[in-house]
Image: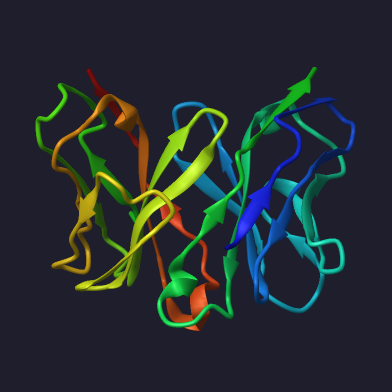
Length: 118
Length: 115
């Protein structure tokens, strides 16, 4: 069974400082990895994804994430946080090697609340 | 505008009264999925559909039904709702080519309360 862990329920950073939101995953095959953001009273919005190739992935709003296969991690990063980055962040994984229709299964982490203080 | 719509946005109902939450997308996506969001548990997949008439269970399918008769619509049916189905529900869709590499587009959510 595939799984995602976001070990921190909350992350607090000061505006202008770098931020990291952690994600580790488990799949039988090779992963497709995604980060989504949810602002209050809104649906989820896509930030970035890892498919294959370069381990450093760049996405929307200045966010990036690094895929580390040996540590089975996909941490979200931003060099300089903004107050407007405050939101709920979700990591998700899909097993691209799953057979049949099983690759349709997408597993999310429990989410990390990011708060950026002025 | 490309979007996923859900209706209703808010629903309060009583135990046992059948309900349907509709989901529609205008992007001609093959893949559609339902999730529920609960505090501390993140998003959990209920059901997904790879195309018309092709549906499969996610992680928490008990108590739910779905159907995919048309490509654009993917309704979620609760035949006999119970209080433990009180939650925030999201519908999502995406392209399916390439083994699931595409990101999903999410609807605005439906907040369901079962008393």
